[in-house]
Image 1: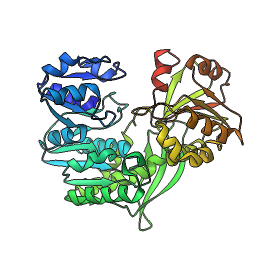
Image 2: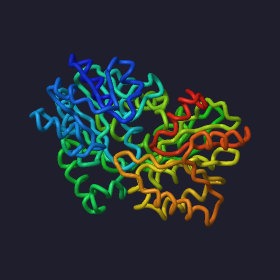
Image 3: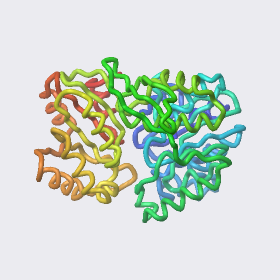
Length: 405
């Protein structure tokens, strides 16, 4: 949403916003006013109201907008209006890895001299932005499946990284989720579904680079030394390679694009800290993503401490056993209060998660950030603290100047 807001302002529109957390960095930098109180006057001033799936249609501001006959559209529909202005839309969908693959494709096209535009659901470490407006040939965008937002797009190239059960609060079943991805596939002129490429991981070197070889039919295509940590980025890179090859980008340009890619914020991101232990931020909020992070942790020396903030009660409930299984594989686990997003509080689900983990490992559930921070200062310099989840804990730690980039 923040990227769409800035793109809109740079297109010459006046943009206002409402959010529970009004302190979005990218909006502040671009002079976009955001409030966290119900301001009906702002709604009255607007010609168009764009809302994310975090808001239900009976939210007071949306009810007011309907009552005064304001035009309203969801985020996905508005994204499609912006995308329609470009010659070729590259839309990256999937349950995991879509932000990283989107950003990798964008960086490769940049290196190839194509001057692409970008819309992505994370911030690039290279410039701390989640958008780029350049030329009209390529628009590279992350395509979110939640509430079927990605079905508004009509991509030239659709990329599907993977499909796994998620967002069951909306889709109700895995079968329905797969049907939506089938519809997305049909909306695309060209599709990258699976890659025949394979990778052979070498190591994470002392410069924190992920090193691996890429093979096609047992033939080595290239060696890559990427400035990222997460081993899952090797698979993400294979998808990006396949997508860019389908666009006619040469292998040497793809290699340069991937090796110059600086990564995304909160994707296995090593940050500076007042703590004695090393600190790594990761957006993982699904058991599969946490398991991928766990695989990366095995390549790093030291005790692995997972500080996990669940993202929505419904997801925790749906994958409770899987969360318990994967979290107990870390050396130590700390839980922080759930980030509810669009949901009402359900503390009994947090207690179930805590109880399940505590059967195998000592675990504490923190509702107070100061108590959690006090605990974090107990860890030593050889320990590694993984701050895991899609919630607001990284921003809390940044606001208290415990971590910084």
